[in-house]
Image (cartoon, helix red, strand yellow):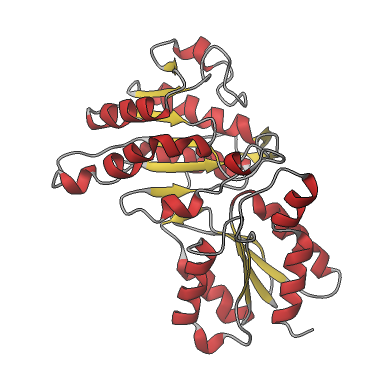
Amino acid sequence: MRTLQFREALREAMSEEMRRDENIFLMGEEVAEYNGAYKVSQGMLDEFGEKRVIDTPISELGFAGIGVGAAMNNLRPIIEFMTFNFSLVAIDQIINSASKMNNMSGGQFNTPVVFRGPTASAGMLGAQHSNAFDSWYANTPGLKVIVPSTPYDAKGLLKTAIRDDDPVVFMESEQMYGDKGEVPDGEYLLPLGVADIKRKGSDVTLVTFGKILKVVIAAAEELAKEGIEAEVIDLRTIRPIDYETVIQSVKKTNRMVVVEEAWPLGSIATEITYKVQKDAFDFLDAPIKRVTTPDVPMSYAPTLVEAYLPSKEKVIKLVKEVLYI
């Protein structure tokens, strides 16, 4: 095992796959000459050349469309958005073309394209640069949506995404690129739609994904000091969702709190809550609680950012509520 930064794990995944398959290329703003806005693609231009690591104009709709067309013609593009906040101008290509092409063509065209980049907040960036688009894209049939939390998961899941014949939305975080974690020396892939139990516990199930995992783990460790053992489930992919791992955990702990950086209406937390009450209602000893953001746009002021985001304190409070203590 080696210790790699999150960005290094992503770079390894892309580079290994590009060495394996000459039909794979990376395209996006600043991915080549500048080595990536967050240095994820550092050195890749030198290795693969300008025909496979391609800088684009500031035109997300344009290069997303090129990616979809390339995928329909037997190439495997990786399209990087500097942030998924900018993907709104490309969302027609992602949803109306990439996700629907196989269905509309009666199975004649696959679109093996990966759209990747950071989602959600990254500090004091204001309302227009802090949206969490995870549940937006997960709401779309035809897409697969991945939100990794660790360098190990990021590399294994990105390699799987690149090899997948369906369009994949791969969502990261600007605040995770410097995170470090263990990554195996040899090649490995991780399956989509399989959650990971990051911490075993018997008293309450905590379900989350993405960068908020760090908040949930911190809360679980704090609760353990009080004798409360929380089981932490990292969904890793939110389309498809591994409902069974969540349900089996709830059958053991009998209580659940879902933690997500998203507005409450139509969130992944809402979906998980519905599924558990439908399939494991008789095992619940308390109503399900969830930690989301308030139902307002993200603000710029640091005090309001802190109030907006899920926190260790908010998780601990709701855990104690479902435990009636």
